[in-house]
Length: 184
Image 1 (tube, helix red, strand yellow):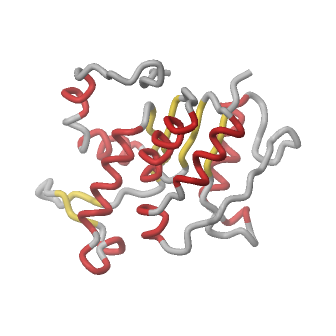
Image 2 (tube, rainbow, N blue to C red; image 1 turned 120 degrees about the vertical axis):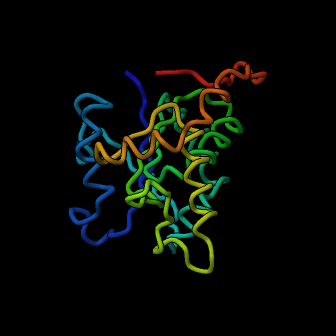
Image 3 (cartoon, rainbow, N blue to C red; image 1 turned 60 degrees about the vertical axis):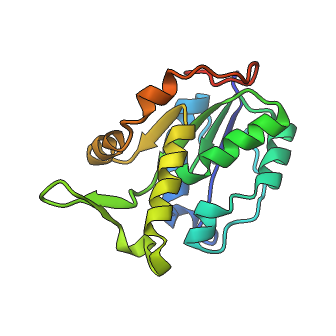
């Protein structure tokens, strides 16, 4: 049986049923680890420090703690509930010498498109001019994932439209065997 590590940022720990990430994990877990929903007694919880702000969640994923968890659990698949954490997950797997697939979940998109099809940054993530950095972090997360999970057909379409650079990058051979990226 595959070992699935689901990295979950809980923003509402006192009322998990109201936490969108937890709700999604509860729905997704049986499909990943058949059949073991998040509440199943076979599911192990590892407490980690939750980011204190929406920006820390995107720019400070706690690489040391991630590497320690990877070394301890040695997962086959890692689901990053915050897609921006995927590059750090990939680096933590490398440090821990664990070869696992990485999936990322996009709760939201830090951009939208105007009627003229021009990309527009989400103003709720543009405090202090950080909107472009959030968008780049989001794109880096997409690039680090073997699979990307989204919440709607619109999100799937918009996320795919931001990845035209993926094909040229995929053609560059990796020199990092045996930890090279595998596909599901």
